[in-house]
Structure formats: structure tokens, C-alpha cells
Image (cartoon, rainbow, N blue to C red; front, side):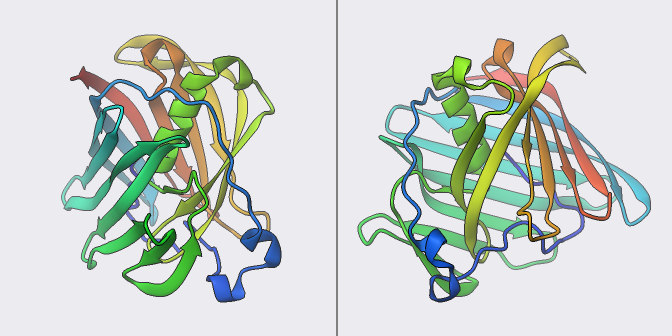
Length: 250
């Protein structure tokens, strides 16, 4: 899912390069989960944010396309009075682990685009904006595909997504990569243009040793497990909230 950052933070990904990564990270094993990809769809979201002491509104569109062999995610975020502030694209294949990104590109407001490349033949992840590299062991994601991989895993084993369960993926961003752990909190009722829906509240916490960004996600099983709400909260309490307005299946 898109990360609509109106203010650039340094909290998104704090992983080290392989040359400085702790041995425990280097020795990570590939986690293989049962998965079931959701149907292709365009998702429209309304954005409400508190940034720099100001209330900001906007919109985001996520284009999710998937077959048995490949997938693509194109996300665009716009803010009122500013225009387009974030473009993200993740594309790749589908393998035994689920989504297998080939390339992740991100273009932020007034910034040059950055690319994370998943070089499958050489089993290496590399970055256009840094010289860091990581080995591909299976199941690695980028930060746009990670939420859709989570959705696919939830659809593949709904009974296992119970309060207290955790799900970890190794995720690449603009410059580096790190493990992301999602924790299932509880079922909640969410109001939306689709009416009141029951959604599973899942939280991605920042690393315990870093003042990172917290992400709250609400997945709706009755709506193919699409995210009906997302909330991105920075360490200083500022936030961006993304609420589903429309689903257009393909």
C-alpha cells in the first residue's frame, strides 16, 4: 500500500548494509506462508493529515493488478494546493513465497526517483541511492508490496490471523532494508462509504531501538481483505490517515 508522506521522515527504514548488519540479520531465514492473492482492483482513498501543525487533505489511488504469474502496484498520492506528492510502483512475479518484486520505484515531492532492484538471477537486492546490498533468500518485499503480501497471507490462512499473532517480512525501501513485523490486534467496526464493516486491526510497530513510524492497518475480510483504513503516525505524534472511498474491481 502507498505510504503518503507529506513530510519526509527518516523513520521508514533503518536497516544496515550487509557490511554492518548484525550476524542475526545476516542469518535470517526465509519465511514461507500459504497465500491467496486478492482480485485486481483500483482503490481510491481520502487523506486527512496533521503535518507541521497544519491539517492537510488529499487523495490517493492504488492500482493493484495480479495474475498467477505476475503483479504490479501503482500508487499516486495528491495533496490539496500542492498536487502530486508521491508516486510508487512495485512490479514483479509471483513465486512459491507470494509476491516476488523485481523493481520498486519511488518518486517523492521535489525529489529524484529512487529504485530498489531485486536481481533474482544473482539473488541480490540493490539500490540506486546507496551501495548497500542484501541477499535474496525468498519472500523479500518492498514497502509498497509488503502490505499486499500481508493481505495475500491473511487470505491464505484467515484462522491464523488471530489477536496476538505476528507476521514478519524482510522489506526494502529507498536506501536499505529491514524486517517489518505486523501484529494482529483485534476485530473492529469501521465506518466507510461501503457502510459499517468489520475489519481486522493490524499494527506495524517501529523497531524497539528506533523512533520509527507506526502503521495501523484495518483489513476487511468482507471486502476481499482490502485495506479500508490506514494510519501512519510519526514519533512526534503527527499523522496521515487514509480512508477507503471506492473499490473498482477489474
